[in-house]
Length: 258
Image (cartoon, rainbow, N blue to C red; front, side, top):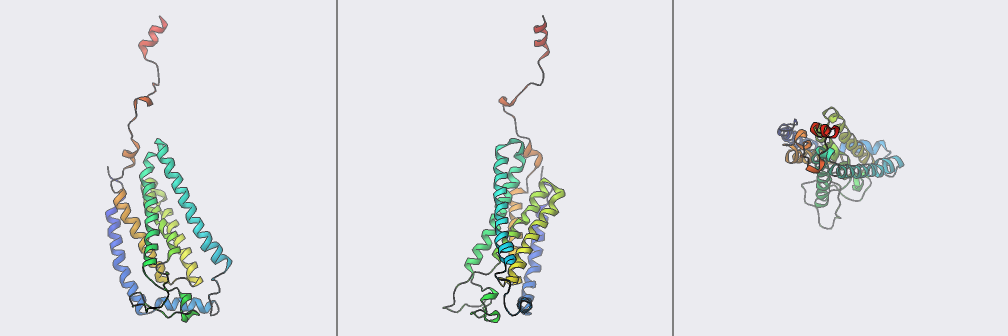
C-alpha cells in the first residue's frame, strides 16, 4: 500500500515553482527590487540600521529564534529515539527520520552555499553606511575584497527548514498538515523579515532560502516516504515471547474441576 501523499505531484509543483522563481529573480535584478526595499527600510530607520542591535530584533527574533529552532530539533531527536524504543510507535519512525533528514539537509545546504559564495550584507555596503561596493551574484569579485557570507539567508533557514512538517503530518495526521506548513513558513518569514530590518539580508536572499528548503523537503520526501504505509509499518510480527493467552483452555479447566 502506498502513502496517500502524492510526492510525484509535489515534485511537479516544485519544478513549476523553480520555473516561476527564476524569472522572478531576473525581474528583481533588472528593476533593483532588493535595493528599493532596502532603501525604504534604511530611510525608515533614520538613515541607519537602527534595529541592528535592537533588543527585540537581535535578542528575541535572532538569538531566541535560533534557540527555538535548535530546541525543536532536540525534541525531534527525543521523539525519534522514543519511537524506536516503543514498538507501538514504530509507524512514526520513518516519518520522524525523514523530518530530521529534511531539516538537516535544508540548513546544511544553505550553510554550504553561504560559505561557497561571497555576497555582502546590506549593512556592509557603502550605500547603507558600510565600506564595500556592491558586487552582484554573477559578477567577478575583485581580489583583495574580504570574503563575506550573506547569501542565502542562513537565519531564515532555521525556520523554512521546518516546512518539512507539512509532509510528515500529511502522512501521520492529515488534518494538521496546514499547521505544519504554517509553522515552517511563519518561522521563516519572522526570521527573514527580522534580518531584513537589521540590514543583514536582502529579500531575494530569503526567497532563495525558501526555495532551497522546499526543494530539500520535497526531494527527501519522495526518496524516503513515497512507499510509506502507516498500516504496514504498524503491523510488526509478534514474537513467541509476546504471546499471552486471554483465557484458559476449556479442556484444562475441565480437568481442574474433576
